[in-house]
Image (cartoon, rainbow, N blue to C red; front, top):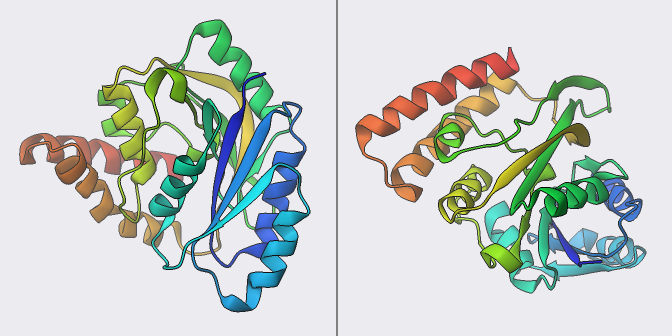
Length: 247
């Protein structure tokens, strides 16, 4: 069995983190290390966080001294990782027990460098809201139009691609990573079965989408260095796809 390094950024979210740790600990694929990167949470939670992480096997806690955002936290985890495979799950998301086993089987059988799956979108109380269906494959151009890969489902192979890090922007850093992997020649593939649960908060979805727009633009212009015309072209597709998915 090949070691999988599971990367989880955390910031002041102990109640949800416990459920995330439990969902990883229930994996039928047991050859993993779980790296939790605390992004400078409140000092009041230090002992509780240490105790919680310490109660789960194969779990490592890294603390950042300055709050730097999810990209920096995930990169700290990737740097520490010892596994051949890098997988991501945030501190408020959950995995199906068969998640790692099924995706690694597909990666091996289909000779994939990057694998992802469908996932359920659930409310903060656990009510299923909708299903995000994973495409069979993604391309550079399809990702520019719509982020078709849920970060909580993604796994990539460092043996074939090397350790690839996220651009250190506050949002949309996961999309920038998938674009980078595809540009490196990663062969991608999706698992149609939903294998994870993405939990959303109670705040307005339209408000959240508006907050993301400047970061989406930054991916086009700063990360991918697209010219203005191409950036506008893909930005229109992104906005339209966002409306379809959420409304």
